Structure formats: C-alpha cells, structure tokens
Amino acid sequence: MIDLKETPSARQDLDNYETENIFHSWSYQPSQSPLRVVSAKGVRFTTEEGRERLDFSSCFVSHNIGHQDPRVVDAICEQAKTLTSFAPSLSNKPRALLGKMLADITPGDLSRSFISLGGTEANEAAVKICHQYTGRRKMLARYRAYHGGTATAMTLSSGDARGWAQVLGGTELVTVPQPYCYRCMFGHQYPECELQCIKYIDEVIELEGGSEKVAGIIFEPVTGANGIIVPPPEYFPRLREVCDKWGVLMIADEVMSGFGRTGRWFAMDHWDVVPDIMTLAKGLTCGYLPLGATIARKHIGDRFKEQFFAHGATYAGHALACAAALAVIPIYQEDNLIENSANMGHYLLEKAEELKEKHPCVGDVRGLGLFVGLELVKNKKTRESIMPLDAKIRAGTNPKLEVAKKLGELGMMAMAANPGNVIAMAPPLIITKDEIDEGIAIMDQALKVADSFTEND
Ligand SMILES: Cc1ncc(COP(=O)(O)O)c(C=O)c1O
Image (tube, rainbow, N blue to C red):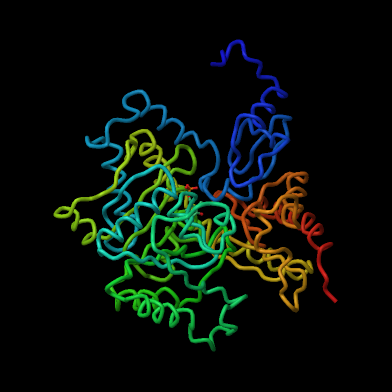
C-alpha cells in the first residue's frame, strides 16, 4: 500500500494516479487528468493553479446552498465527535429527526423515508416499494430521462444514450413520451394538443394490463440532465387522475428538481400534486456528505407494518450524513434561498432569452427557478439538433463539449457534459444578480463557439 508520507504527491504524480488508477464517470478514460479542485467557497471554486471559477452548475445541481458553508461543516464535525454511524437496525437521533423533517417539508402525507446514500439508490428503493406495494411488475418511465447509474435506474432512463453501453434490467419497463413541446413526438402544438401525451399514457397503461400489471410511473417533474423540460400547467394534475384511475403509483424523482431548485421547496409544489413516492438526494445534503431519501405516502409506509419490507443497506440512515442534512435543510428557510431561487430564476430566464435572440445556435430556452436550459440547434427554423443524440457516448468532441471547454477557459462551469443538446445553467441558490450577469457574459462569449456549427440562412 502507498505510504502517504513517502509516496510522491506532486502535481504530475497526482495526474498520473488520476489517469491510471481512477475510473472517471460516463466517459472514455482520459489521457490527461482533469483540472484538480483544491477549494470552493459560495458560488466559486479554485483549481490547483490558483484560478477561481464561477460554478454555474452547482456541481451537477447538488450544491444548492453554496460551497463550504461553515454552519454545515461545524455540524458535521460536531456529530463526528460522538457517532459517525451505527447499525441501521438501531435508532440514531439524526436519522429520526431527518425522517420527521422530511415529512414536514414534503407535500401532502409523504411521511415515511428510506434513507440511502444518493439519488440512484433512492430510485431503486422507490421502484422496489412500487413493486412490493402493488404486487405488479411493470414500470412506466419517460424518454429523455435520467434516474441513476445502476441497472434498474438506468433501465428507467430511456433515451439517455449512456444506457446503451450497459446491461440493463431490474424491472419490466414501458416507455412513454415526455411533455417536450419543442419537439412533440406527436407533432402537436400546445395547447391545441389537449395533452395528447397524457391520453397516450392512459392508453398505454390499459394496453399493458392496467390495474393488473402496471405498478408505477417514474418521472422527473422538471427533466434535468436530458434537457430542462418543463411540463404545461395541466400535465401533472391530469397524470394524477390517470394514475388514480388505474391505481398506478407516481414516483416524483426530485433528485435534481427538489430543495428550492425550481423556486419552490419541491417542483411538484408548483402543480399542487402529491406523488405517492418522492425521491431526493443532491440538495438534501448539498454534497457536504452523500445522502438520498425515498419518501412514501402514509398508507404506503403503513402497509409495511404488515408486509415485509424487502430492502435495506448497511448505511441506511448514516448518522453523520443525516446530521449534514439536518444542518442544510433549515438554511433554505433561514437564508430565504427558495425565494431567491424564484426571483433570480426569473432574471436568469430573461437573460437566457436575450442569449437566444442574439445567438443563432440557441433554438429554445426553458426553465423554472434557477434551472434554465439553452437548447442548441444547427438551424433555428428546422430545429435540427446541433449534434446527434448519441454524441455523449461517441469518442472525440462535439459542439457542446467545445462550448464547455470554452466556458472553462473563460472561468465558469455550467452543465454541459450532460447528454442531449441542452446546456443547463443551475447556479447555487445563493447567487446574486451581479453574479448572474457575470455568468451570462461568459456564456455569451462561449456560445459563439456553437454559433460556428450552425447553418442558419
Ligand atoms: C433526476 C435524477 N435522478 C437520479 C440521479 C442519480 O443520483 P446520484 O448521482 O446521486 O446517484 C440523478 C443524477 O444526476 C438525477 O439527475
């Protein structure tokens, strides 16, 4: 084993360890080490060469309260002194308090949580609860989704090319379209469409065996990695009606959209619809420690007083990570971050619209709260995408990666490594107007790279 006192840790050595000893997520393994981050504070991070950059992505939409908040760091240190974790079959105070806090802030009677270590695990648990509660096998998910990296979660992530390179499984899946109005799969226009996408789901459920066979449907209330897709206002109330008709459970995957990201505590709050199960991670602890939660409505949770709950993990309800969540969640309220997300989100969307007017590469702009996407096209009239759907899993570069590279050079990180042709801007919820102006000015520069790939006449 390496002796940390003896083993060289100069820049070049660390670069070598990165390229030879680490698997890097969702990519060809790099021949050069990525930039090394040494510190972060608020909305900025600093890399090894001493350069500070603006974080316009909240690290894949997780660091909602900003980096290195001393209130959270102190709470973690305090908890670490007494109990870091213990067997999940026994109680610990942070887990019990977190269960109650989540019941208080989530909509309706969502009240019983399974606490895990991240978003993927939260969704795995949600699907298992659906199967066990209904006794049915089939799950519905929507194209252009991402629900996590493991076999089941990736199976549910249809249309995300990252799944094409792995063996799927874990559940019997039926896929339905998104309410993606810019590229409606039915060729309709909203509102004349009368939500054909919901009628379609209703019919698919019937054809797939309805109340006999279909256990649940999983969705991101506002789609994140695959394109910042915001549904029309009637979408979720109508979906609730369809699901109630068939007894199909609704899983709202709020891993990205939760915790103030869209300007409300949870995105589902915008439509006053209570899902049967909600999954949470990212903004739950804002990356200070890993944590996920699967929270079920009361009658679903209560069922497992009589029925064996067939799920678990050694670190279910890890005390230290729960203590981090207990420090993070009150900060949203104390610092008015959800209000700030709504207000600054309006401003960010306005500024993004200006980018659309200015740049031939920006075909559409969409967003809710501090969750705003720029859809890149080759041609605004035809809406032809700037790159193929599978660009993410192909070797070499593509126009969006070129933009990401330019953003990095100019001093900013946005969400540009995600699949699809949308660059997402999702800064920490503490962002100010001046910082948004700074980020937009950088984005304005970087988009010129994508403009050079357009074919507008
Ligand atoms: C909507 C959604 N669900 C689930 C996940 C998986 O979460 P994790 O990476 O914490 O496993 C992600 C990750 O980006 C996500 O965006």
